[in-house]
Every structure is written in structure tokens, then in C-alpha cells.
Length: 140
Length: 140
Picture 1: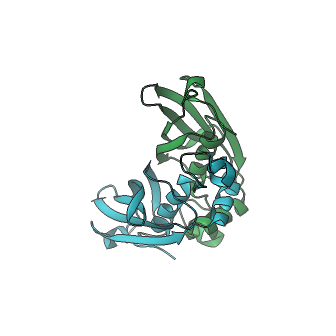
Picture 2 (picture 1 turned 180 degrees about the horizontal axis):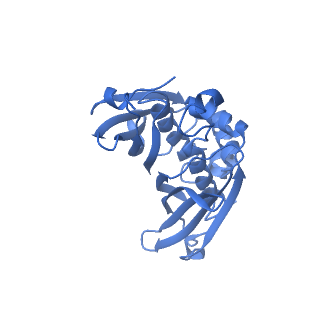
Picture 3 (picture 1 turned 135 degrees about the horizontal axis):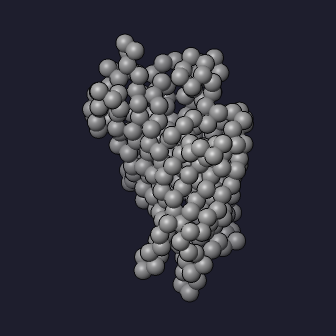
């Protein structure tokens, strides 16, 4: 189940996953986090806001970034040190969100890897940011 | 359902919520995000890692921060612009996580509010960072 080791990573490597956000996903995210903000849950309230309809929690998209890192690049074994998130556009029900992580820097001495992270809907960024992780060495 | 307006906020205002993380919460977070990293889900695998046992997704704690902002300070109506997250310690099953947000700056001209955000377990920070939000004006 071990993911990739530090020695198997290089700058420019990229991985992504795509999830279509359903109303049930937003409901489930609200239940597990306690974030019951009505802009996410209540269509009538959301219709009165600038968004015009229910939107997904920004942290749901952030969870997709975590999924790419934790399951694919580099996968399990890495330790999440930090993540920045800039929320650029809303995600609505039915949107296909592609979360992508691309390695931008590898600090071999510290075993730290930096990734540019973005979530896209219709090729436009909805969340942008940067992740820093610690990755195990093969010979450790 | 409208939350607090910009005019109702001041530097130093703080709000928090506490959630006890159950195994079912971690399972639900994995299901909704697709983050099936075995360190979160598989006790036998997790026992082989430096954590020694299953740990919660860092983004679950981030979701609690979103919950404080989206439901309490300032509550609905605010727009999430950005969040930084530094993951300091693991969160384990049974841990009571207190997510707290404290206003550190208000840019009245831009209607932007900055909050220091932290998640604590046994009074020790597990996640630290900063949120920036846009808050509606009462007279808008």
C-alpha cells in the first residue's frame, strides 16, 4: 500500500482526479464537518445570495486535493505539512471538479516536496494553492 | 439565516466549536472526498506508520474551521477567499478537536476580514493558519 518514495519523484510529475459534485456529497460534507451554512444546504436561501444556487463547501474541493496527494502522488506514506487555498470561483451541483497536483520543488536534504495544487471546473480554476509534504526515502 | 454583517465585527472577536472525531467521521470524509489513504482507513496499515494508529484527514479539521466561519463568525453571507493550513500534529480517533477563529484584521474599505484559525486537541495546536473572507455590509 506504500506510495511513491522520494527517489521516485521529480519536478513536473503530475496527478489528478475528477469527481462530479452531487447534492448528496454537499449534504455529507456538511454532516461530517458541521458546516451547515445554508448557502451549501438550502436552495431557497442560496437563491437569495450572489451565487444564485447551492454551492459546495470550498473545503470539499480541498479534500479532493488531499485525495490526489494521499492516494496517487505520492500516495500513502507522505506526511502533509501545509496547504494554501485561494477560493476563486464557486462549485455548483453537477460540476465536474478536477483536482491536480504538480511537483514544483524537491528538497532532497529535508525530504520535502512542494506541489502546485489546483481544482478546475470547465478548465477554469476554482481553488488554487500549494502543498508541502514530507516523503519517505526508499532506503530509510 | 443571515450571519453577522461587517459593521458587527471587531478585531479580537472569536468563536469556536468542538467535535469529537469518530472512526465513522473519518470513513465518511474518505467516502465524500475519495481520499482513501490507508493511514486514515486501515488500522493494520496505520500501525506500521510513524503515527501508530489511524489518523484523521487534515482536511477534516480544516472543515471544522470552515464550519466556525460559515455558521458562527460571521456565519452565512460571508465569502471564503483564502485559507492557509499548517498541519502540526495528527488527530486520532476519539480526539476532541476545538476549531477556533479569531478576527485579527478588518479592511473596511474592501470589506475583507482576516481571522487567525487554529484547531486544538488537548490545548495543543494540530492545525494553524489564517482565513480571509469577504463580509457583506448591513447597508448594501
